[in-house]
Image 1 (cartoon, rainbow, N blue to C red):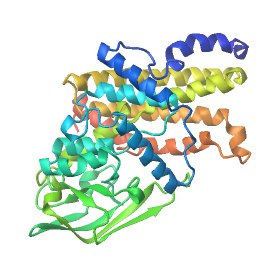
Image 2 (image 1 turned 90 degrees about the vertical axis):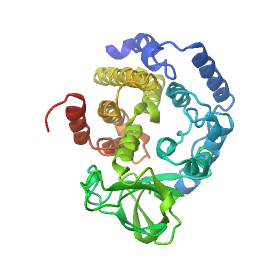
Image 3 (image 1 turned 120 degrees about the vertical axis):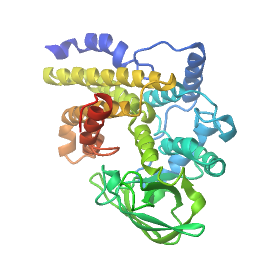
Image 4 (image 1 turned 45 degrees about the vertical axis):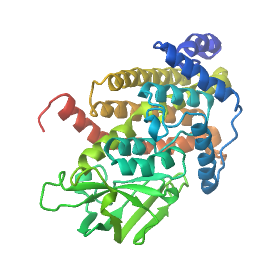
Length: 396
């Protein structure tokens, strides 16, 4: 019975939640933001329809490089970076607008290592900013994040990779695991222990490491969705310049927390726009075929996405206006995880007949990938601990 009323439901819900993808609920653009949004939409309209991304991963990364360079040439990469480093000096709201519009249009993924470049902008030396930021913005160099280890995943303080000072160099020995995109990266933001005589958190430092350095070996491995996104990275006496340290000795923990806070932020990675687009696609292509149970699932997914969007909007507002803390990103991360996993489960169920029939199903692939949402960027258990101690003030 409910399925017969689908068109009316879609008209009411879609206009606010699903059909409004790219704006979603409009919280009121300023004149400058509205002009920017219009410029982004006009640019996107000139590119539509987007071509299907290549299946071969090596070709896909070349495809992404070309796409990111097109974004840079149009002035849409590095919006929050200073002009002298190739940016436009805007606030984080403009990145969120861009990501929303790109996600709504079904554009290729946005600049994945942007949050690492922002860390270098904040903590790097003038020489490091001059050397690395513009090539990163132009996608001339790609980055990965060398944090996790076999025995130090969410517990970064347990890492064992060591960097020992030797004159003008540090000698690095150890292993990183689950390093995303290392197979295609040029540079790595590495955490290593530089002082074993202080507390675990205080003895960590951060470095920029060229992955072509002798003594560095990248060993990709295949994951459950047949991707080689992850890799182990081995350091066997790799000598890196002392000038490659980011921040001061012992700043690694602070830099790591800033990095993962940016990595966790749904406003910084376009997840909300992607979720809204998936719901819009379902509405447009399968809406009339949904049964009563599936319509309930659709409603629940819409509510979850919009709750996430509202909370992220609050977080973004506080960031732009100088309020809030990095700990608030843990709330966003928990909401994002719950939203992504429930939505992917719902979409998998809707398309299950195709998945079990042998046809390659994006819904099944997304479902399998969503299982990692409660692990990457810090596990859900770690996020709850952060919220308990740093937001709620509960004792450890």
